[in-house]
Image (tube, rainbow, N blue to C red; front, side):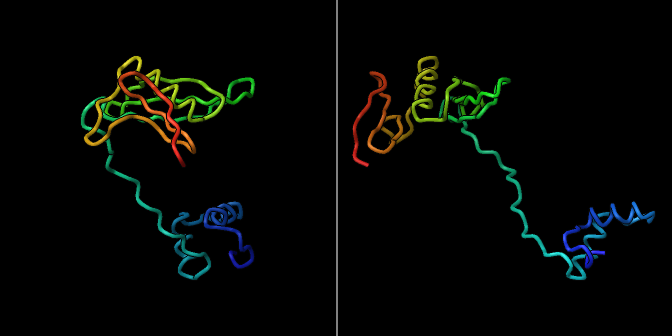
Length: 151
């Protein structure tokens, strides 16, 4: 059957046999027969899913900022930019915007830090911020500032 229909896999062969009035073997058995006779190519092994979850040991040690596209009922696309505490997965702030830009991420960070204060600075870090081609934004005790930097 497979030689006559090169694109058919084990599931399709099983369905065709069943339609023909034959009580077929399990899909896995049919697939083993196809492999044994070199009628299907072996698929590369997939990486196992991670079993270990990484998270900070204490709350407010690391914040994650992410963006998710949402389709509204009228067909309009908006993005939700949110800031989460890495330890507790607590939502610190969320904002709707037109696109996942650095401006939107920065606005979300400012909202979260105005409500919850800045996370403690890890050893060796001297400021919070992000870099983009030609500019850098930082948040220091006096508040957010914009500094020009070379790319």
